[in-house]
Amino acid sequence: MFRGGLSFFGTYSSGGIVLRQSKAFSLRRSAKMRYDGTMSESNPAKSDDHAVRRGFVYCLVVATLTAITLRLMGRIWWCECGRLDLASWDIWTSHNSQHLIDPYTFSHVLHGVIFYWLLMLIPDRYVGHRRFLIAMTIEACWELLENSPIIIDRYRSVTISLDYYGDSIANSFSDIVACGLGYWFARSFRWTWSVVFFVIVEVLMLITIRDSLGLNILMLLTPIDAVREWQSG
Ligand SMILES: [Zn+2]
Image 1: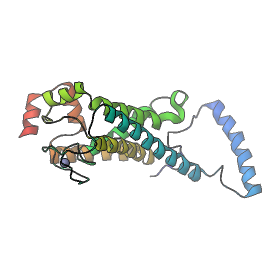
Image 2: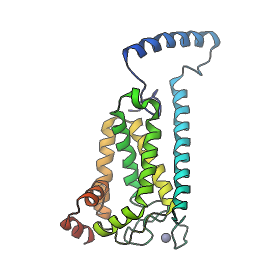
Image 3: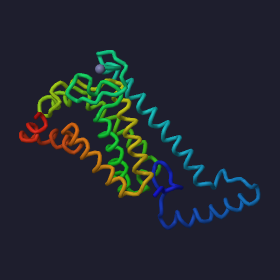
């Protein structure tokens, strides 16, 4: 189930020339292992650990830079209620998207899953090990866009988010980290688990809050009155 030995940012090139080069290289490296007894260069699990740590740092750096930008855009750090509750599960209150975690956090986890598979469609020679950074950057741009007046107004006019005035900075920060977790999940397990996870999250969100990532995108692009009535009912 777990695919060890891959870079956190994606698989390496499998082009013929590269494979021949890396075969010679790995022969040299395994020879080195026998003589000095270390596994530092050749141990895939260990280099994977480094890649995961680097990915985690990337994620935090991108989230922090986005938080600073959002502050410069005038966003508030935390919910105006001032309560330190980490989570807010009722999307019909003014606390929604203002605390650290809410039902939409799971939509952002799905962003990461989608980004991973979409970026895997791009050949290595174009993106190489930069896939994770690209995914994080797209998510950060989305958070900035989501909190811009044009999208906030769009949400309020065509979706059920009538009281939406933008996320708090803490919420945007956790959304980006959630996206990173989704990417990690998709990268770590077989594609079937991504599909299962995606369907479970969508169905649970539809049951519990009558909204989901798919429905959110649909309503943002082509609002349907009947759907909005069902969501508001
Ligand atoms: Zn609150």
